[in-house]
Length: 590
Image (cartoon, rainbow, N blue to C red; front, top):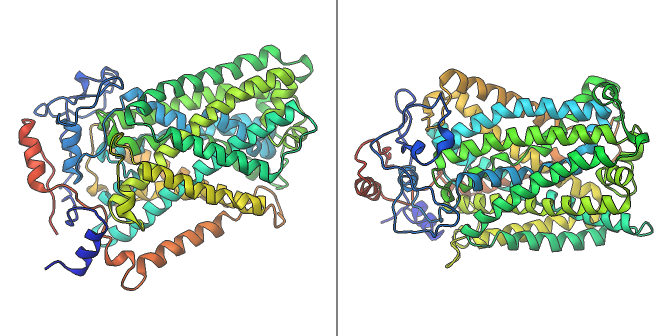
């Protein structure tokens, strides 16, 4: 007879009820990996990669134009099976498509357009330019460590699954529970935030075209509804179509960035052109905080917001070929590309925005970036360029929606959400988790309703986005440092010293910015200016804890961490069919 816990978990439709926990080796050893270098030539320069297994067949990296053949076994599926999951999603994403997911989730130009007010208000031109540079330097080691974890554990669960593999048994259920809820909520909130910013761009263009038009909160929410439905519709396409779209998304992102870098300096009136001395050294503290150093720290919110989302490719681990390498490489190449392209855009803006910072951040258009374009390019030029920035923002939102839906799918597969049986479902033809996509849509529309109450309420949710994501990211970093013996490296591995150094730097950066994210932007804020992110985040944590410990029906009664959906015998069968008889990671049966 099944225990009550097992019966309850099986009612949630999660298949086999045995929880999988890998025995940590005596020292870190790479898990069995295919010879990726035969099919992924871009990895040939990776000198620090450990030797890859030669006994496993090379992976079939599925080209986006190639039909998915579910009957063909691949080493990706073998690795996924060794982690305890059967393959359910189509592997249609090549390396470049996965890179597109990371790069589009960042959305360099629209993200800068929506976030430059943080840096300009706190540090003027110098704060605007140097905060992004500093932030990029700290986020690169963060991406390196995330890449290592994504390479070692390539599943759609991402950070909460990484955490499950790194923490001791006694704290695994609660740690994974809190991490998964923070990560899923963070992705939904950052999607909602980006859609709201995109809606504001539409209204800013309307205001530029018709100066007498004054947008209302109802207009904003109406556009917000339309854009939310549009983006969720884009994310409902089949995996092959989504992979193809990433090529278009990358092109649009780079093309619009090039337009900003070229058009602003060429068309800007001479009276608005700034000198190099002004751009790189003029620091204006308009935040109200008396300490200039602290004001500069507030300007670091710019790179924190702009360069978020690069890790979203981890949620496509079960849809990409050669995931153990394509996922880390996509994260690292996306953060570096966005860092370089974004800094070039910021320098171009700083040289052409004039010196009246107050008029820019206080623009009646509601978008400081739109005001800069209007002053430099005139009405027609500004609307034209802004329209393309808006199109890129739509692709940015779609990529974030994709990541949120995959995270919800993975967490529901492990039975953590209410209605997990309903959410853990793939569309019959597209094999895409459309129920999760439209769950993101519904929750985002509910979040958007707060904008009708007042801006303070909706801004608290928007601030929560990065706070929740950073809270979920930092926990596997801490676990990597505290319990290094539990880490089993994948093919992307920097070696013990560099790996831990990178983890320390990433942990320090995220921990520091987590604190900064909780501060109000202004000194002595009134009720409307106060940052309520800590209140909302505290409520989320209390809700998750309450749900976990609720008597008889709480998460503690059924959630033990990731749930194995494939039998050990099936894993051995996959290995035998592929000619791989050694190195399959053992499963500890409870």
